[in-house]
Length: 99
Image (cartoon, rainbow, N blue to C red; front, side, top):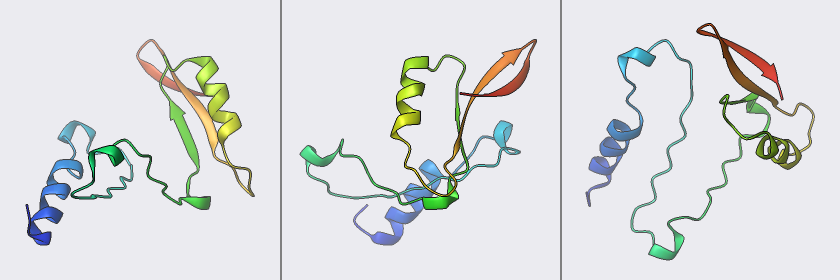
């Protein structure tokens, strides 16, 4: 893994491959591989400046309501803040509701 070309392919294969069951999903994955981090930095958050490109955040049906409210308050203000939605299921059909 010392060769940068090998590192790129390993990261792509590990994080950039989807199962065929999810082939129709539209998603974007941001992969930032930082090799040789000191152990003290492994859990440090990574700031990704998505700016106006983030349009919505979809939470699962079991995501805690109190935490969802905290998330809403933590979102940056701006011209077009992302919508926060919860995915609920009814008779096997997903529905998105605003949080």
